[in-house]
Amino acid sequence: MKKIPVKELREGLVFTKPAFIEGDSLFMTSGVVLKQSSIDRLNNWGITEVETDGELVVPPLVPEAAGSPASASPLPEAPGLGSSPLPASAASGAPAPGVQLPDFPVSSGVFEQEISATTRAERAALRNDSKSFLSLAEVKEPSGTYRNYTALISWLDRIFLTITAKVATDNRLIDSMTNRILDLIRKDRSVFINFILGGEVQGHEMAKNSVNTAILSAHIAQEMRMPNHRIMQYITGALLHDVGMLRLPKELVNKAGKLTKEELQYIKSHTLYAYKIVHEELNYPEDLGQLVMQHHERWDGGGYPQGLKGDEINQGARIISVADAFEAMVSQKPYRNSMIGYQAMKSLLADNSLRFDPDVIKAFIKIMGVYPIGSIILLNNGSMARVMEIRGDAPLRPKIAILIDETGQIREQVKGETIDLLSEKSLFIVRAINPKELSQGGA
Image (cartoon, rainbow, N blue to C red; front, side, top):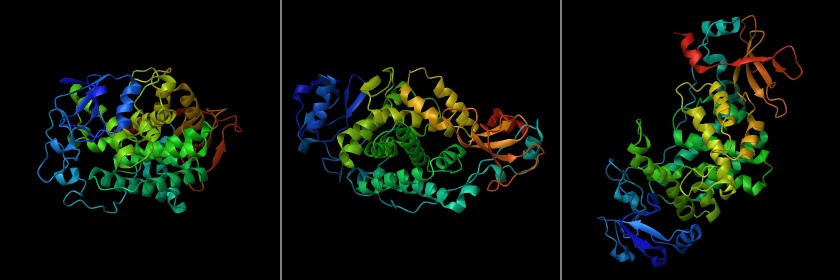
């Protein structure tokens, strides 16, 4: 690849092939008009040159695809996966042929669990349909909170569809979601964490991840006493943090096997695509663009795309990084039991200031506790319960709701007995129910 000095870059020029910085970090895709702000960023980062296999030219000289204007922004070809999955009409800014924006239904199916028979409560769980007493959807549905949660996921999924098709998207739609999330979690701070850990919404994975990350980010920002405008900015950033994935071929994003080094570098470019979408397409401010671009930076400097460390990283990005990591851990398993939340907390506690800002981790622990809200736990008297409320000053003694008592009697969730373990000193948590044990119990 040829090297082009940054001092030769000019606003209004375009690259005929993708341009990279520091060897393998995507700077600019082909056909995108250079802005002075992009050039200024390179100077601020101390970057002196960019590399490309193409030329730096004025827009009329950019090779055009048939029916596509010179200013179009085609995706670079993914390694080993062929050309971009978007048709030329999408690249031109028009909706792809046949693309519709339906009101997608959101499934509220429940996860199945089986429990090893070591106590009466566990044997009762084996004898009965565990879905009926472990599902959160049935408990919360009458209040409308669960419907609000699934509606947020469905709505964001439709917004992502318009962005994928390069249909003009009014950012006021996203802002309204931000306001809605902040309003809902202020009314009921804990219930949405139950839904995240329950994992009962099926499908719309990217939208679900983004909504969950936004909810967790809002909780962390509130715990850290962030001003209201910052909390709203972080929610918006969390909703859009992975939007750059929409510019990558689905074959690569959904690849089940191990990624090659080249494919991994291409995946990493999603942070730069996210910046461009948020700042240049959705017209959000530069600092929000920086926030989404930096959510894969690490506290120790080992992240990407810039290798920033410590306080160099945008504070919102540091918060989203923790929320996104936790959400990924509780969502990546086939059994989405709340025990995964317990395991995820142990993983975050073991970070030792490598990936994450320790102050953000401390705030997150205060919010979630050792046994996160929604965890299914076994008590010393043999009963099974769900964690309903945690205390930052007593993380091992939360408020719980009995699901199955020590005699094996299943309790109605809505009317189930609630116990404060801080007051009930004779009871304590023996362990969280492990989803692997659940599957083995029914074998």
